[in-house]
Image (cartoon, rainbow, N blue to C red; front, side, top):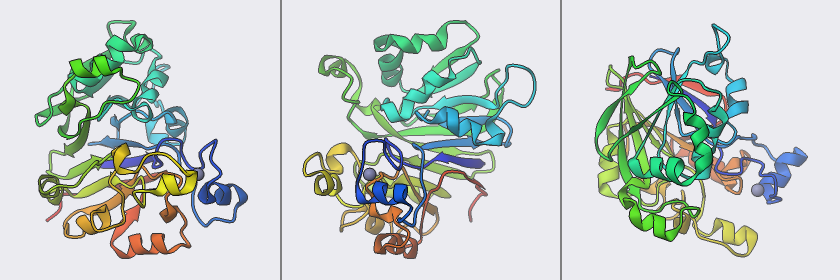
Length: 313
Ligand SMILES: [Zn+2]
């Protein structure tokens, strides 16, 4: 299975347009040792020719233009992008769908609740279904394994499973509407497996780490894990107010209950942090947090990374 990291930042990107935190200021001034990042986007493929997007980032257009494999190769209207898998309905994760509205045949996979939010409650997404040949939307249930089909229906050889993790729908979904939806369909972890058995776990938003999740991750070859915040009170320390990381559905890296310590027991998978908020001190490659993460065996995703996952031992 091939993996491309097109974007690795949390919502807002790095630097964020309205942010003058030490990281964003330092990056703009050229005084921070670190790299700019677009909003998180991953693409996967079994053959390096037909690609599936994990989510659809607001930066998707520029990310496609920066990635030769995702650009049209033959014909006047054609794309190597076969479709997208949605883990939730957060704006950072779905806005890019609207950038794919030029009548290209695509397949989108999501839970029934996420499809309902987008297609029934937000009429502009109807632009994705103007023509019968345009977009095929397939619902999946949490826990069920389903095949990823290319746009014309051919089996890609990739199998996916969504695990229910978060119970919160985005704030733009009204409380009344939320009460009609299934909470277990709100936010998922995506597990993708190739024909050879190589396994990728994609977890950009992890509200908590329990034993069931640890068991699941232990059988993965690569983790793309929630690296949003270093500490629970990170935004409050910088802004003077706001929500904690956990209130926003992200377990922080640091502390006894943080992901660095909780996932230290996982020996098998290659561990990569993704979805990194611009305030996270590990973005400073000269800082102690960056050193601690790297010494713990973790990598910190960067835009433009491309690698193949071979089946592990
Ligand atoms: Zn910032």
